[in-house]
Image 1 (cartoon, rainbow, N blue to C red):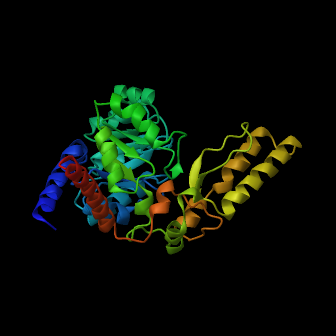
Image 2 (spheres, rainbow, N blue to C red):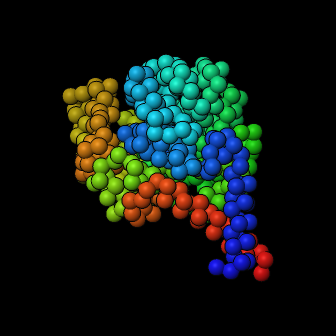
Image 3 (cartoon, one colour):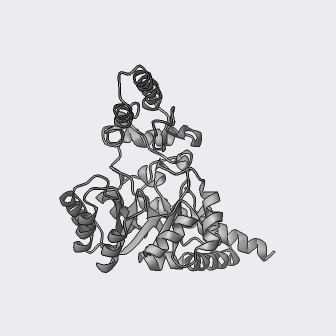
Length: 350
């Protein structure tokens, strides 16, 4: 490596630190890289590994009870002294109590997901000294959330795994980033490389959130078969669940196509037949459809049932080539970002 290249790299690293300085200041981390909250996956081990590597881990509360969440936070704090957050689902019946659990444990960042968060939950979190992060799937909702007092936003594209909206990140970034400067905005969905992160930082993002790459990380408790399914998959294998009839809504969830996803289509068709034959009421038919995937994510993640379980994954799964330690994943992302900036600087200097 020449002296000039070393200088370019040092300059590029300083530029990266500047580009995401708002994000790192908000999170209290070395890098503005968040771990996406993934049920059954984003628990103490993965969250602590991300935070210890300089990123920002986020516990996925999901359907946890307040007592269980309190224990998970305590266990995570035993593994890291670095900042991490907790993701709470707004429709959880004990949302208010879960917010208080986070505050009593000294959690500095609460992520409210799964819909427009109640104003009372936002106020309670902020009054308790925590910073509030929420998801904005459109500019109008971003503005509404800021009026409600959220401290930062995540814009997540349809490329992401799990529950997703209909709009790609490339479109959301153009719609939202130029017009939201009041709070930090983190981008998510389909991100697997540091040079891609740089592109969004230059558009005005403050950092990025990744899930799929971390789910296949060495410290992830996901079953070995779950991780191997990621390594074998191509981007086109991660598709959203299909809805057969608009009378019976299906929440779009992105995951790897398998026997279970094919059976779900057959299950919907049979349920529709029974409804039309008068064997089921509309409410009973809707419940039949909704209950099909009950427990399916746990079966895939914990038990390794990748055939009938729900193997949630983003389209970035095609770039997961090996099971890496979380620190190595983050180091790779930062190295790719720095290299991209150094390359651009070198080209400008020609």
